[in-house]
Length: 334
Image 1 (cartoon, rainbow, N blue to C red):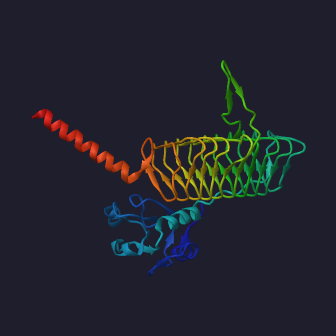
Image 2: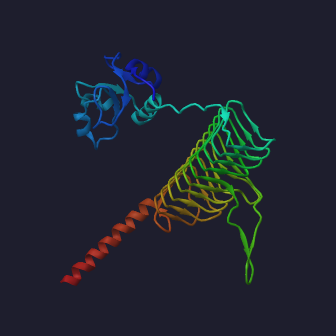
Image 3: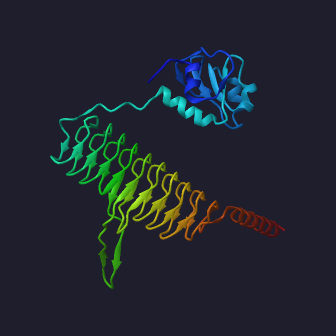
């Protein structure tokens, strides 16, 4: 935990405007309800105006349109992107701890593995043959870095993670329990049995990707599974073999993407959604929670339901169905 900091120091780091009291000393971040004069908080949207008007925070990050609603005892920090500013402020007070360079005595490291002298390898971690661990990486307890796996600079690998057949760019974060690079679900069907198809590709996690806890990403069958730069995968996500995500995609918890499906840049997939294989989801499309996607989705589209359909059509059909049920119920009472 860092701090305290003056408002002037905070604003200099995140941008925005502050009217007066720039030397106010801030010790920590807090919610509107729990904050007092030592804290900085934030406000977005309009549903919680009462909490804003009642807060005792020393400073509040708000949109310029809401500065008039900040109590007189608080200082308004105005910015057009309050939540982004809040993320940066929270990171100022709670920076990611730097790695403690060195290899724990209980770790098992192959003789031909390459580990940068600034990296941290935690207790009981396993580093396989020909693996490469870049500068300032952190390898958590009991993590397994398989043979030939490459980690770029500043990666953070959580406890009990397993990485195999994988190439990681810079600043990749893999949270505890995730499994990356295991064989995909591929088999041929005979008259009386299944024949497993060898999985020969890799997983490529590009720069600034984050992989949530207990998420699984299968290696490719012949070509690589690729998670594009800046993408975020929530906890408990399943990514099948040969899937390719573009830049800045978001996949929310419990969603599953079947093999060889392609998500173009900035696609968002809601929680518990399921996508069948060999689809193309266009740039900027949004898949609603619990949707079942069985066909391609055009760029910029919003789809919901199972089978998934354009959001407007879905809700129109739902309204018609409700009206029919209501009318049928009225006739039955008559």
